[in-house]
Image (cartoon, rainbow, N blue to C red; front, side):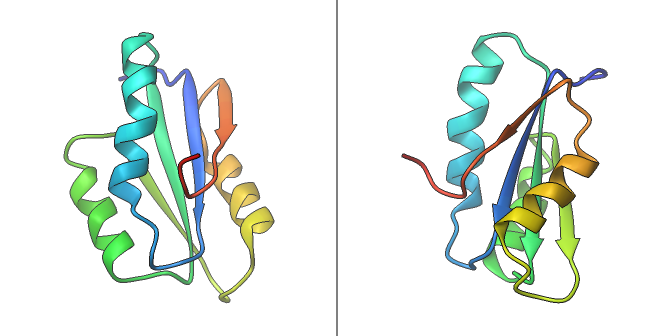
Length: 99
């Protein structure tokens, strides 16, 4: 994917977030619609399983990982940092859970 149409920015503020589930759920409709997309996950002092899962997902999906320094900065700062790194013409600020 050379030019990104849609960037999906997701803040991760808890180690309990299932990032794989989010990537698969959001990528399916974007892929079906023919959009070139990327995921920008912002880790707010979160390490462990979510971080390891994101590294594994990078083999199959366009995933960028942004790490916030300082800890516990919150979703609004995480979203701002993710938007700064996003390359898409359209940006979706998505919650770290499915509704």
